[in-house]
Length: 162
Ligand SMILES: Cc1cc2nc3c(=O)[nH]c(=O)nc-3n(C[C@H](O)[C@H](O)[C@H](O)COP(=O)(O)O)c2cc1C
Image (tube, rainbow, N blue to C red; front, side, top):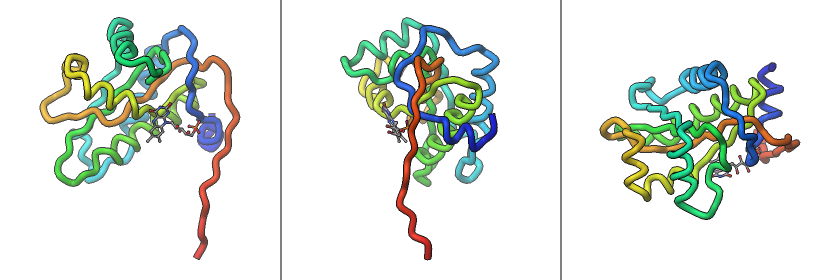
């Protein structure tokens, strides 16, 4: 899929089929995430966790009655180590957006997830299971899977030309 088509087709998918993402597609999506811009080029301060284990996914979704990752069969957690420049959120968002666009280009559904991060951080027993390297903190979640349906949307942001 051409880049502008993927940009226009990407949407936050909140209904997934019970079908796992292929390893081949997952690898392409993860690699797309790795090609994102990262402040000061500190890729070593970024970490990606891929959760596909059903028990762990069920444990996370069972932490709240709210749907925090919509039963996406793959939940990616992007973590970062803040080196004092406060770029961890921006860096993680750049990595996440590349993944969302790559997933769209591959015909997959995807979603940027913030709520799941707070939930994981509130539950040390789950956070510990991520086994993150010392100093890394989860920042952004990305849900991936096959969309059950499609969604047309167009957004506008006000622009001032000067
Ligand atoms: C920083 C950020 C945090 C978000 N967190 C969540 C979330 O926790 N749960 C959710 O369902 N959607 C979340 N979204 C998705 C937005 O609600 C969505 O991108 C927005 O409504 C536009 O819709 P679209 O993605 O379908 O174009 C988040 C998006 C961003 C950029």
